[in-house]
Length: 469
Image (cartoon, one colour):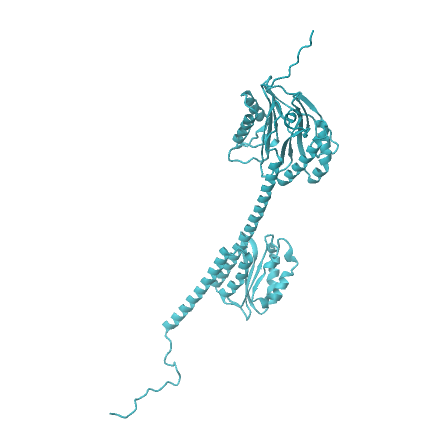
């Protein structure tokens, strides 16, 4: 048995000298490194995409943009300079990393006086001025910049910095940064669209409330007046319109049968314009007119006084009002009326079986403070039908481009009145013809209102006993 110690192999003087990596090992390490970088970049883009579809707060998304941009290309710093919808510098949304090294630059950007001008972001000279400001602040750093654009509109600038020296980017890195800029543009555009949608929702709510108020101001039903049938309808082109009609007893203290037999004011008007302003003016005039009716003055004096009361307010709003005012006495069937340049009502005479126009001279309400108005009078007979309407009816455009016009309205009224229908049925037929003319799928361009009064055909006239001989 040998007592010699086992032979030991000498340890190399330089460990690893005999373990030189092969070319395949180096290639494998390079591929592993590239794969790790790709996975990292994919995770960054996934994070940015998640933020884009998930964040409802644009500020949170914009905070993430410089972080992702700098990490994608492995640099120390990044700066985001966004613009508002009108092109102004968006001071509140300036973002940078690392923040402590960009505080002074952010302060200088936020204090730019030109940045508060509309269209700042669309001015190429101003964009170059921002670039020069950034370059002066980091004179020794390598800088890369790109524009943030959506729908052809400049939404901002994105910068990345190598604070230690020059910066050379491959085409892949440039494409990655441009993708970040494009996603940022999409985020800003989405936020602008969201803000616009919310604004429209607020306006829609206001219009809806205004429409409800106006609907409450218009009569929800026609009153009972002895000896006549009434029907009325308003079709607003918008939720709030400028058309107005009303039925008012001249002696509101009367009740029951006494009110039915008393004199009634029937009025229809149109405030020039549409939407909330027209609706507000209509509401104001309604209150003034209801107060004037209590005076007991004739129609021409009521319009004269109303014009003087409303002239200043209407002049300030640059709007005018057409108004047809009438009073009907069931006892005598006498109708007195005055017209402030409104569409003259159409009167179907049952005995003559023809239509005529009721009109009297008068200027628009609000045009001249001392305007004078004429007063007309007529006695209605059993079967007579009176149609009040606004110009939204006759001016309604048809499918072929022509207007419904007064002639077509007269012809339709004649045809319907000859059939012996009641007031509501006549009104329904008139609106049916109007809808058919405009097209069932088309919206009216202006408010269309019609009020119809028909004297009962079986009206029993008062008889008087002959004097004894």
